[in-house]
Length: 225
Image (tube, rainbow, N blue to C red; front, side, top):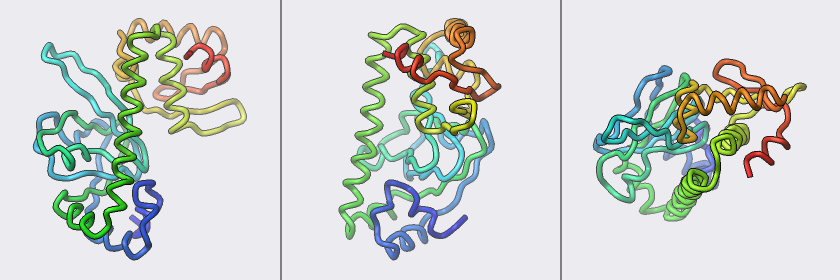
């Protein structure tokens, strides 16, 4: 992994090159296979992670055993940072949904770094605020949007973060199973599959395994409102 890789991470891009190198020197590399768990809900939190390549899902299991997918994170995003500001057990389970490479940073090393560079804490709080904003939007959608609208919105969000422009449309390798996509929008797999089939029949999307090709983004945006 390149030494200057953290310079491409929004959280650290404002740091001087010397500071980036110093921070990188105390970070270690971690690799995960698809389906491998990075940490479990309830585990003690003593480090944060920077996602360099791949995708990680954050999930929560209810007391009755039902699973809820809270977020899918991609390159440049951080995870496990909540315990830095509020020490305690992990609030989610983090699982790789694709081959993934991360940098991990012990909290004690980060706190020592923050003592001399407080501006980095502002960037971390901004990242937390963005995550909270997405969570609030998702909660509002559960109340006010029907399932097809939530599916359309989820596809557009995944496209904004992971989409690749092609001649046919916007190709989105989200790496999620149908069950995981259903957990992401808070609905049953059968209901989500029905919505996807409707979008296919209307010519808005084309399904391709753990990916989707968005053929009519404007129609999806209108349906997501």
